[in-house]
Amino acid sequence: MTILSNGHQWKFSEFLNNKNYSFDKKKILSSLSEKEIDNAYSSISKWEGYNPTPLISLNKLSKELNLNNIFYKDESKRFDLKSFKALGGAYAVEKVTQGNKDIVVATATAGNHGRSVAWGARRLGLECKIFISEFVSDARGQAMSDLGADVVKVKGNYEKSLIECIKQSTENDWQIVQDVAWKDYIQVPTYTMAGYTVMMKEIADQINNEKISHVILQAGVGGMAGAMVAGIARYLDYIPITLVVEPDSAACVLESIKTGKIEKIDIKRESLMGGMSCGEVSLVPWEILKNSVKHCISLPDDDIAKTMKLLGNSSFSDEKIIAGENSAPGVISLIASCEDQNVKENLQLDKKSNVLVIGCEGDTDKEMYKKLINN
Ligand SMILES: Cc1ncc(COP(=O)(O)O)c(C=O)c1O
Image (cartoon, rainbow, N blue to C red; front, side, top):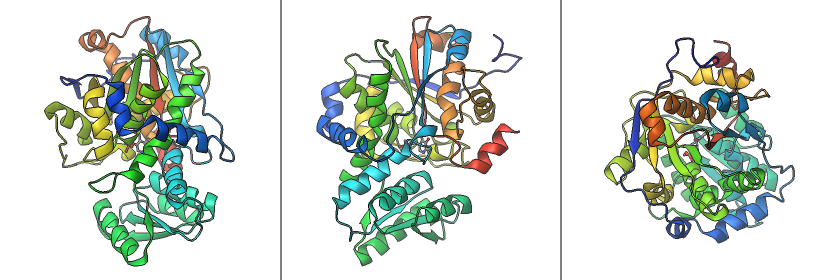
């Protein structure tokens, strides 16, 4: 080991086998249907500026870990938003407004989802209202204003911003575009997930004849992970080993899979992996993930900056990759799993393995990115 060692131990906090694991394609596609998935690809692939994002081989890292290949889906190149989130909110905006330019769209957000909604509204020439909590940075608020949205800062946390968004939207007849589902609010978040499945369609086209043996999926509320699992059910004719990774301070999917029912986490410390710092798995993804995720892993923040640096200075691949905080956990959990012989065997990671990791975002927060890689 050269790049990875120097006495550094790559850490995970918890590893869990799902005792209820069974990957049932039919059941998965009953939560997010083939028709929804196909409609999303058919629409989004026609958007101006659409290009599949690169699938990069982390060839240096796979050699080091003695794996066959590691595919890194680089979402830093997704439209001009630098995150897979561009596929979700913007697609939901298109679906709920159906060409009606008089509809005003609204959302509450910690940042990236709101940017996607604002960007989707601008694409279609719609008015857009964004509600953010007082804890969302000015830079993130500004990014949404720059996309033409009306940004409203609300005293209190995310929940408070959502309550205010619902209140004002009801009063003004605005259309709410949230990425989180709750009872009676299922269809719109399902559209956002359908948008995310475009990533899996592209990957299926990009891997040619190679077979993915393992998929590592980050989760916040689980929308992205659930969408990717549905994409696997739709586009692959085999089943890779599925692993969900979360911050140890907000491992809501892991804790829910442990008990077999949705568990709410009281987040005591905000993770550096900000987009993944969510206390409760959303309903639609939960229905997909509860059986189809084979393993869960949780991570501390310790290795995030180091991993971003190594991705950025081409230590893992032939090219430099701009990877934001939420892009690092896939790579970290893979390295940490390979360094633990029991976990490595449990996951069946060996020299034939082709592992897919998702680089969800680039430097969506430029200041934070600079701070972390120059540390
Ligand atoms: C920027 C960002 N936001 C959010 C998430 C989490 O997505 P979800 O809340 O759909 O699970 C991720 C990745 O997991 C991410 O990279």
